[in-house]
Length: 588
Image (cartoon, rainbow, N blue to C red; front, side, top):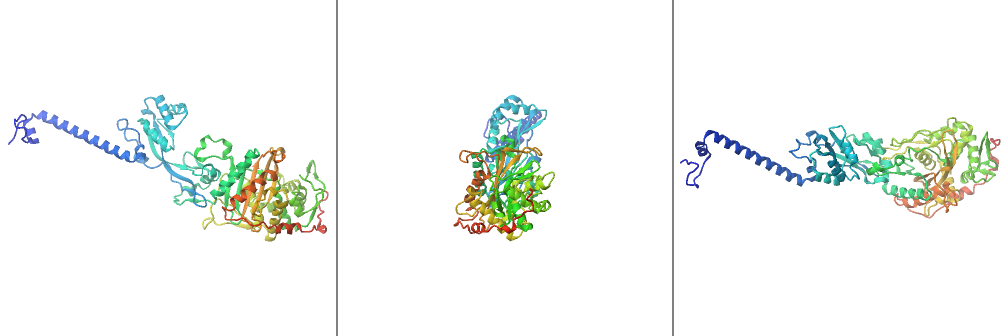
């Protein structure tokens, strides 16, 4: 039985058919329309509430778009659901410690057409982003582009703060940021990326294709983070003590060429490089080019022994300085007498080294130094690698000065690699920043005999035991090495500055079975009261080595032992061979 709208029995059921039958046609249509609109409104509200619930359970997704539905259409299109940049492989040290890794984050875009009050928004954004003033942001918002990227990589704290801003003109887009857990400790090794997530320096640039070429495995370096920490700490201490403008240090495996540590100071934190001074980006270890002073006497002596048919007991007259035109070659601590090859090395005689080099000849010197990689760029896996600077004219005078480390400028990396060949049996091994393995085998070439290398090991030990490198001694470890002090060139062809020096010490240990070369270079150190005003390598670089070696040796698995100076005693007991005094260049 049908009912009317005003049926006195309210408990009776009123069906939709009854309603339709008893209402005028126009009224029924209006009711249906209103009911439909009400149902649609409920659906919209329910959907919004559901989305909001999901957003609150996933806060990072929630802040992917701050804009509301009433302000603009959907802010993150389908093409923007993935990060802008290709994923890069992680970078680790030799023990698996993370040095560089991609982390998900958000980028901030501002749509200028939706900005109602640019000044007010700039103030709120400055506060959210941790800016001191809103001026720079206001300037960006006033630019002519319709959309502006204010930040390409945001911290979680900034993302949360921007969510509180909640302006419909803001859009947070998914992207990735490159994080460097070791900070400044490995800055010059790992490098950093540009705003387009492309490598700008270090391994990030040198191995760009390897890092983005679909490689999902981490790229493992040869560097040991523990060793790196010790080397950086001690190098910084010496820079501070001697008021140097910078420095570099390298630890190199003499057998396989692995770089265990590479430090250049000053350095920078790749996570916060915006406020870093420009010179901090300069990698002194591979891009610095210096005349390395008396460290080159190791190469001169090896050349004389290997291809010059000289013996440790042969002698040269170092009684008087060498005059060559308007130039004079002197000894820093002149003995003013005949000296054996061993003594020339021990006392670091410029006169003796110069005479040895002239006897061997310019062409032989060029070939020998070239075989040690000193005339070509280092093959290390970085773009920041400098080419050596040979003299414009390589004649007899240049042959003499290069013999004691003036006239040919090289990088510390080149020097360390060449020094490794002096002590490892005479093999030049290509240096690498990657851990050796099937994909990165060592390449080497023979430079000299094991006998010559053995002689160099004795001489290097002699320098530390009783020569200019005594302050490099480390209790429990048999250390050998060579000091190097060179005046800095003012400019090509403009001479040298007597007040600005490069000091270095190239060491190896343990000398009875060498495993590592340790090189320290200080740029413009100054003397102190404790050094009696001296700033030469024996006072500045050598003590740094003496602190580094006992600290890193246990990390590298080398335990202290009772020092055995049998090799020193053997070298010192060699009688001077007065019958083989070299007299060819007595006119020099």
